[in-house]
Amino acid sequence: MRRGTARLDLWTIGSLLMTAVILMPVVAVIALALFPTENIWPHLIDTVLPGYIRTTVLLMAGVCAGTFVIGTGTAWLVTTCNFPGRKVFEWALLIPLAMPAYVIAYIYTDLLEFAGPVQAMLRDIFGWTTPHDYWFPDIRTLGGATSMMILVLYPYVYLLSRAAFLEQSVAVLEAARTLGCTPWQSFMRVGLPLARPSIVVGLTLALMEALNDFGTVDYFAVRTLTAGIFNVWLHMRNLGGGAQVAVVLLIFVIAIILVERAARRRKSYHNTGTRNTPLVRIRLRGWHAWGAAVACALPFALGFLIPATQLAFYAVANFEASWNAGFATYARNSLVLSGSAALAAVSLGLFLAYAARLGRGPVLTACLRMVSLGYAVPGAVLAVGILYPFGMFDNALDAWMRSTFGISTGLLLSGTMFILLYAYVVRFLALSYGTMEAGLTRVKPTLDDAARTLGRSPIGVLRHVHIPILRGSLLTAAILVFVDSMKELPATLLLRPFNFDTLATHVYQFAKDEQIERAALGALFIVLVGLIPTILLSRAITQGKETPTT
Image (cartoon, rainbow, N blue to C red; front, side):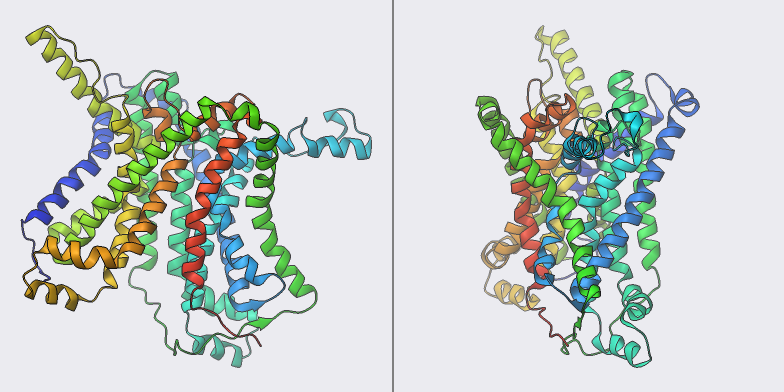
């Protein structure tokens, strides 16, 4: 079944075509940046670009540090220690992943601003009357935006770190303890270095999401490169300049990927002990136990419990005003778009994963690597790269129809649901492909061989053997793509048709107008949908991993 060289069959040709379609936006952005109709690159360098770069670097540094400390620290506690509430925190620490960063940014701004309940309570307690009587941190700053992202992005690091700690060799950890290391020392000297590859991948995912964020940085007036694309394109009316800023953002993305790969190059992290021996948890007592409980409770409370409770309060209080025909339309738009994206991404991901199973030639391997980079491209960059070629096509077709038949076709593709759906598939295909590939690796090749000897074609083997086995993976991939599409904001804002809104853009518009109460129902709906994959992920990493306690 497997081949070592490339074969130009249906699967390879299909993979090549998909690669071309996926890479088209990136190629279009680079081409537009190099050959803009109006070159404002010198002006950008002299004015706003250095500020965009500096702010983006500071944001990435803050997100990286915060997610590392919270993610690895809590993962180590719930994996190796026993303390009050540990079993609850195992899954609760993942739940903030369901909360979009821009949603908690709106909630905490409403809670912490001068007219909000927190400062009002402080003024009542201490008798303060004006802002000059006391100091309170301003949340609408770079530090505030960084904090909001940390609260919802640390689960990426927690998830992968915990999985790595669960898989570590018990013998190595026990050897460290017998050599006199305390639990903390064994974590720092043994556990943390062994988990390094997983931690780096988690940090990479968190940084990718931070670069893609627009709602938070726009609401807090933090001028990152993503916000700069919107500013130069929409406010300065210069698509070429927006593409040039997008290329700088792509350089950041490529740098993150290269650093992640360099961190694992020529390094081995193999287990050296018997995995069948269960890890014995350390029973914490006294203030150590309660300190661990508080350390795990704070990220969950700040990242989900407090904002979700406030959203629920707003949603109930404003239910009659929010539950109307408009909300039903926004919900339907989101569900239809996200469902269509999930169906398309799962179908294409299954095709690519099965093509890889049939034969990993050099051409096919290169294609699959490039397709997997789609998730790393921020939504704003995709929007620039999609609108430019489709706009050129629409304009060229309209001009030809006018000159030939005297008929105007208008914009057939630009500003339609088609390119919005295309953006979702390009961005989230990597999620589907990765899930399908992982599922197929668990299917023994002998099943393929047996089916082929019975006369089944490769398509027949896929249909009658693999798809029934992969039902769980298919469902998981569909849910992941569906939820991420529901939350996607930058690409939706730039590519949506005229007078077309999803729940994400609906929430953004109301929050931007300082009416977060009216947007609470839509935000709560997005959060509740996001809980589904979070629960599935938690069950996946805990199933069969129960360990005893000393």
